[in-house]
Length: 165
Image 1 (cartoon, helix red, strand yellow):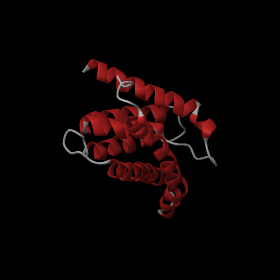
Image 2 (cartoon, one colour; image 1 turned 135 degrees about the horizontal axis):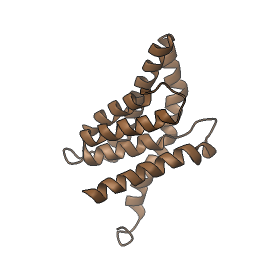
Image 3 (tube, one colour; image 1 turned 120 degrees about the horizontal axis):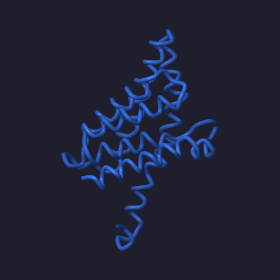
Image 4 (cartoon, one colour; image 1 turned 60 degrees about the horizontal axis):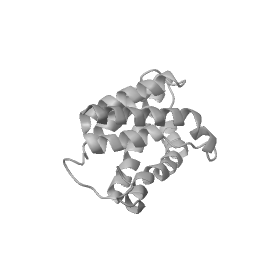
C-alpha cells in the first residue's frame, strides 16, 4: 500500500512541478494542458472515489495556494471531479479507451463549470460569463490535455512487455 501512495504522490508532485514550470513554455495561444487533472483522472480510475476525493482536495488546495484564485475554488472543483471520476473505478467496471477519453472530457467540463460558477458567485458576474469561459478556456485546454492523457495508452500499446516493470 505504501509504495502505491508514494508512487502517486511522486506523480502528483512531478505533475505539479511541470505544471508550474515547464508546461507554460509549451503553451499554444496561451492554452496550457492541465496535467494535474489528467493525473487525478487516472488515480480515480485506478483507486476509486475516496482516494480521488482526498487527492482532488489536496491538489486543489495546492493550486489555490499557488494561484490568484479564490481560496478553496480549485479544491472544491477538483474534489467534485475526483468524486465523479471515481465512479468509473477499474475494479468495479472496465471501460475502453474511447469511453475513458469521453469521460475525461466530461470531467474537465465538470471541473471548470464548478470553478467558473464559484468565480461568478464570488465576483458577482453574469451567468453568460460561465458559458463564455467554458468555450474560450476549457474546450481548448481539455483538447490539449487529451494529448498528454494519451501517453500512458501509447506506452501500453507500443512498448514491449519486456521493458515494463
